[in-house]
Length: 354
Image (cartoon, rainbow, N blue to C red; front, side, top):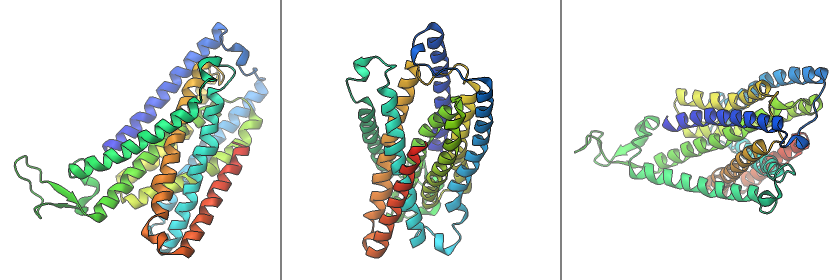
């Protein structure tokens, strides 16, 4: 539960950070700095039309997010969609492809565009590939966090997470009461270690999704261009639905309790709508092209891209395709690759509009 509280705190921190960014960008524009890069002011009719679309976007994206992440969880009782079933493997492969394309085709290019903008000074922003460097560092840090979390929980007997495991944790002495400090030394069997792995994957994946969801929500909410928002709504609904399916599959495999599942579903579902609402409220002073906004959004997107790319390739696709289920069934493995290609391809096509 502590890690879920951290996700919630991170969401609030991101919203606060972006709010401060908005205020700073407004001051920059007022002082004339970066004004040559600002978007031209649009007429009131265009703004009214854009506002209507953004309100529609809040509710449609919220519904798509809830449906996507809830789909694997609510239908887990169906034989075809059990975590160890073939259909679930194919759905998860498709959703993993969507997450992979989100990092490479959507989030990383957005970061590159922000950090190489002509509105930023040539030095240092155009002299060094900051976006790909930050993404690389984020991927390595995600690996470290992934590895250290596994090592810590195994070494310390899952004392901080045993509430999620229940009977999966066994005592070294064969009983649950402790010695000396009042807490027994625990050990994880193979099944418990596998379950722990799924829980860490679900938490880290949600962390990366929350970061870029707030950013894309803010960008839409601050936009005054109705013709841009209209196709963006459909693209983001597709994006949130299938990205939610990938996260929902991970949550299902992690075997969380109902309360924990509800918290994770809530945070995934509301972050983009909250970002849109924040963008609407601060659209009068927000400028996408202010130096501060470009740097903050660019760095956040690059960080999210590195995290998502690592999670998709290592913890989702790599773990599944190198696992015993797909390695022992070549036919299922081929269909899983087809599902990945469909997920990657569909999400890549969405880059035309979003």
